Length: 102
View (tube, rainbow, N blue to C red):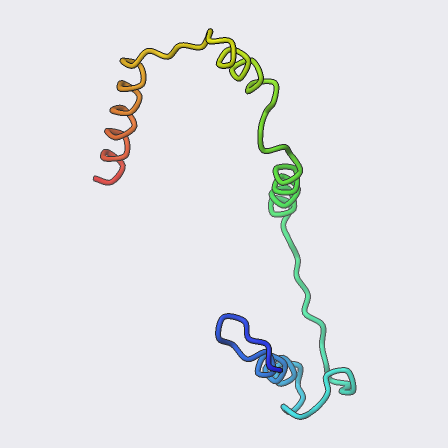
């Protein structure tokens, strides 16, 4: 069975990586003494961005402390939104998007 990733034959990827390591397409990378390791160095800013991304991924998707009072008000019938306020925000959003596209 041949595994495909977005129409790329995985067997071809192995041959490419072996060629880049200095061997022929039929050679084994593990058996070749000329294989080199790729190094990557990240700036402190990139490391900080990586840590920030990890923190975002670890954070909950919903801020319960903000959502729960609104949910309770909706359930109790105490949450009312002015239709004029909704229309105003919709129009402002449409105008801002139009302004950005110009």
